[in-house]
Image (tube, rainbow, N blue to C red):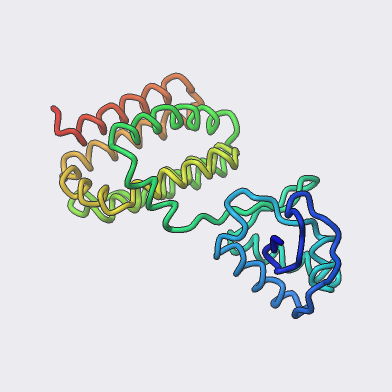
Length: 245
């Protein structure tokens, strides 16, 4: 017999079958939140897996639908799930081990290739979709990198914030999620050690100037010029990583 994450006897977890023996559990939203959270963290429900419906969860926990809905909202606020109207609730949590594995397997060339495939399109979407308010926010984040020529760590943090804000301004949640994973890889230990060597004051100054040129092109809503700037920037970053002039 196979047990699902709530320890209710089921012949098959998907699709959800009828419950024969509901488990007596805490019916408060905090209790439901903790039980589901524990099951997600332990891996009983994997990344991008769909949770049972609110109706099924209410039956399993012998709780009101409103209690279940509150618990799911809390899980979403904790970045453990995402809720999509009409489709259900999906696990967004990934263990540190999963993140560590992809970071260990990704080479500098592969990371740059991935960024080359994504960032020019992100820039085009920003120009198409971002409001002036979004661009003001992007510019304010860009200012965080000013005066960081002699502080690689400060520049790296400002650079990551700028790129995540850029991804956010494109108004595409999937691209934003993908770019968050790219940022996670860039912050891995092996990358941190490499950046300390690469980020000289002159290079930081050059990267900042590139970012401001990109900002001007975005303000002018010039898609082609903005894409050219980001491609040129990434090619230079690749050469710097490899120690090429």
